Amino acid sequence: MSWNTAEREPPRGDDPFEHLLFRQHRVVSRRQALGHLSESALRHRVSSGRWQRPHRSVYVAVPGELGVAQRRWLAVLATDGLLAGLSALEASGLRHYFRHETYILVRSGRKLVAPPGTVVRRTVQLPAADTLGNAAPPRTSAARSLIDAAQWAVDDAEAAAVISAGFQQRLVAGDDVHAALDRMRGLRRERLIRAAADDARGGSESLPEVDFVRLCRRHGLPEPSRQVVRLDSLGRKRYRDALFDDFGVHVEIDGGQHMEARAWVADMRQHNDVAIAGGRLLRFAAWQVRHRPAEVAAQVRAALWSAGWRPPDGARAPGPRPAADPARGRRPLPG
Image 1: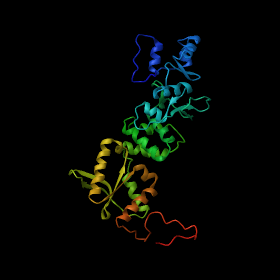
Image 2: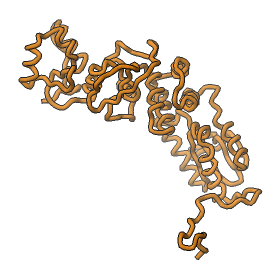
Image 3: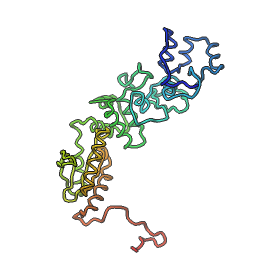
């Protein structure tokens, strides 16, 4: 019989051990258990099958497969660390970023044996302001968790997306991320994290449209009009971030607000309106404009070329060139 969060009930009475088990989803450290049970009683509960021992220093006071919350407590108690990164964010309410692994942060220099499925990260920078030691389970603050999740992300796209999601889902606000960044040194992706936080909070430092115009100038593209007013299919005013008027190519630069479901539906309507009118709509995240300008420029160039634009320098059409013929050592002839 497994024990899951949906079925558990608060303990009756004033037994402190039962309240501890309830708070920690029936997961306890050996030290905690021996504060309430004798050594023989603890051994008997395991040998009888009432309890299980998934780690040498941690017990679970129910049989069966462990749930997500129990795996979090197991990782924290086995390592004496803090939930961190996406695991801490999910425990704090972040949606749509579930990971099977449990991420734990511990101070550098410690030796430990982590349970299976636990990813241990080490740090020398863990000020008290970045920890929530009284949370259940203990974890890093939302701002620190976002920064770590972005550092540990598989690529820049995931890093920027999780920062935006943290703001959009109201886990952080204002200068929370910047304040945590200022307490740290030598971060991976620090510039990207700062820029993503600027874009997500909608501060005065966020000027993605200006960055896009500069990008066009650097890459020899025509300069678009900015913040052009258009009426949508319902007669409402819409502001296009950038518009190449002569070629019907529209560009939207998305910040964190586009993560919200209602904004996403409105954006789809705008996209459809442009397509119905025969135009082309390109969309880029603000972080792409800042950190992958060549990729953005290549896609804009391809859209403009398809719409009839030709560069004044007579450059060739964008896109991959034909592969060389290995047998002849030169490019194959057309046809």
